[in-house]
Image 1 (cartoon, rainbow, N blue to C red):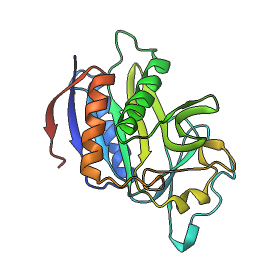
Image 2 (image 1 turned 45 degrees about the horizontal axis):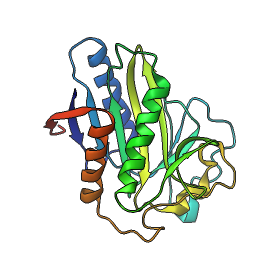
Image 3 (image 1 turned 180 degrees about the vertical axis):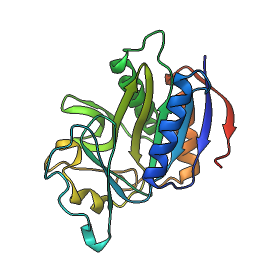
Length: 217
């Protein structure tokens, strides 16, 4: 089993999250820090991955509510984060398989698919690209960075976010992409219950052992 420490944030500004991940990754690379799983929510934000193209942020005030824009160092294009999502960041050393990008992405997707299955949702992969899909609609997105064999970033699953906020972007590079959530599918589940289900799936898929939970400073 692979040991992890768990960090939970009730809600976190995206810039603070990025700084936290960069600090932990540097510590893992230096041999000072253990693997971490971070569970959080973000204030409304559009994040631009390294493959984001001009014009993929259409409106930063969809429905009149302001949404911040933040350039980040993960792979992928433009996505939305906000309250009502489960955001899971996996910071781990992939050694002895430091180039196992495909396997890491598969495990992220599988952890979401198994979590959703526990609530009766038949989610899966799609040839259109990475992510988690339900009947042609996207319910989860992912983007990762791997630096010298150490991963950062991760995935977001739509539990009950404001779906109108996705109208302000070209999500993941797909025009006219339908986005859904557990709530939109008629499934109401509170954050604590959903996090607990994700933790169970994560430990099974990643062969992980949560050995401690850290309290954020």
